[in-house]
Image (cartoon, rainbow, N blue to C red; front, side, top):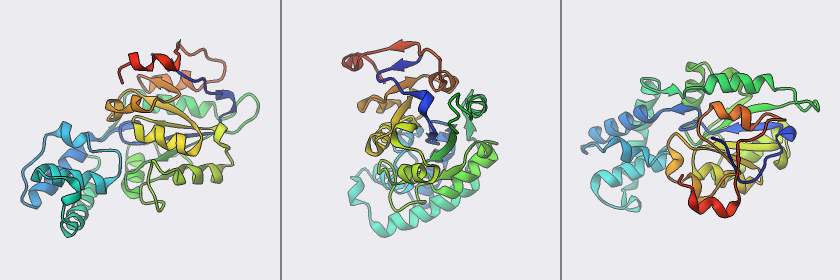
Amino acid sequence: MIRVFRSIPVQRLKLLVFDLDGTLIDSAQDLCNSVNETLRHFGRGPLPDPQIAGFVGNGVSILVRKSLAAADRTEPESVDEKLLDEALAFFVGYYREHKLDFTYAYEGVREALAALRQLHEAPEGVTRVMAVLTNKPVNPARGICEGLGMAGYFLHVYGGNSFPTKKPDPLGLRSLMSETGAAPEETVMIGDSRVDVETARNAGVWSLGCNFGFGPRNLMELPPDVVVDSPAEWTEALTPGQAPRQHLQMSALRNIEG
């Protein structure tokens, strides 16, 4: 079901920017396996997969820091920085080799991307482009998009180390807008978590929230303009002339569970 809290002027959109983990792909198992292998390597016991998945979304450094802290039953800020650097290097190396062991594109993603590409030329002649902006390191992100046959849909795939700052800082999103000539009102950020909505707000662009993946636990903490329940609904939500299924007032947000 599509829920609209603020109507996006889809006929004006030039730039569609997608998050990766939890939005285009389910990478949870490979991330969890890589974290637990890192913990094992450094003499720690494993963590439950759902707990690790809850740490995903703010970049690998925070993922590894929180995982070490959880394994040691301490606070993230108390993690030894030398240990963190060593664990991060091990994690990145291990994940690089295992990033596609179990990772897959969510059902309907490829079909939705293909349909959105067919809308490349809007009725008014506005050229649309699609891109990926993720906090995952750029090389694994590009490798995953290529390995899953999605890279051809995107003008750019940028990662958490492509810019000096990560989401929710708007630098990466603003850079994409500058490169494509898209204004804030012509841009939408599509993602599954509060981080993505906050990034959109910080850049002054529209936001489309995905009520699946890793982020629904916090997606509605900072409500997006539109929420969908599956990738298949992206096409309807972003197609000019389509009637979204359900319009809601912002005051109704408190009655909706993310």
